[in-house]
Image (tube, rainbow, N blue to C red; front, side, top):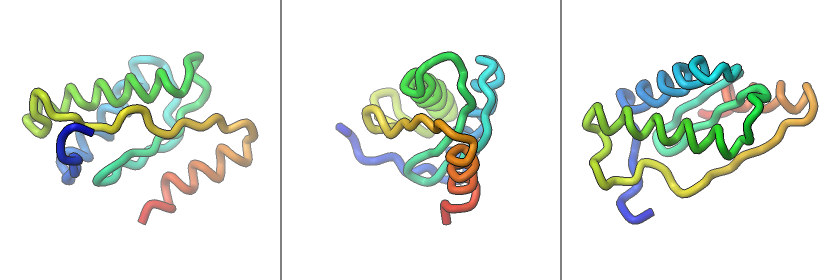
Length: 107
């Protein structure tokens, strides 16, 4: 990152979480779980017909725009690191364990 890492306060976290919900609804992606932390976020989305990388790029982009509109992120400030971690979950058990981690394993 070229700027200081962005720490998401409660208001920023709520904006990002709402953006995830809204964007998934608009794109007809089934959001199974989400957790927005102070310095990163996790989502589990059912197969949406696009790559996880595409989903991640869209979620980060739309979240950044909303954070900018709210005055939380500056015009030239980076909100997220380049790329991130994406995983394919091939079995129902892996989906269930990942949802549990996202929803319960973050504290």
